[in-house]
Amino acid sequence: MSNILICGHINLETTLRVDQFPLNYFPVCYPFFGVRSTTAGVGYNIAKALSTLGNQVRLLSLIGRDAMGQLVQHSMAADGISMEAVLAAMPETCQSVILHDADGRRQIHTDYR
Image (cartoon, rainbow, N blue to C red; front, side, top):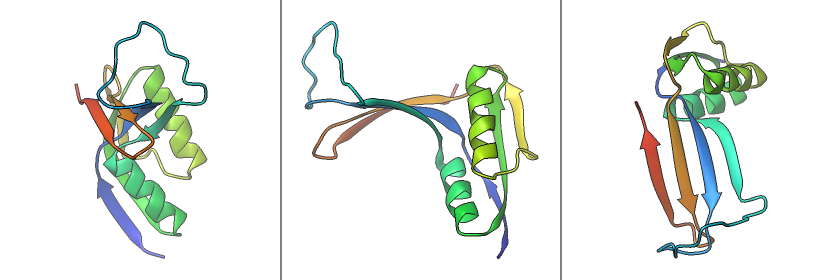
């Protein structure tokens, strides 16, 4: 087991399954089980993977003082990642929306604030 320091981004990621690209306009869509929100970001994903492999990780990052930041804290606790070096110092937690189709193509919209 190694001690690893990671400095990286954490955000709340919402994924949306779409039928095709380009998107056709329609006012309402019901993609049952096609919308999902999770804690993500390169820093978080690396910390989660290395922690799962048995390493002791310390993640340096910033999150918001909002409801999304509380969701991030809950995810980190559930994944056994320490909040010691993650500061809730921003007004809002960064977010992203990822559209993806059945062929694996995707379009990413990221708001780093």
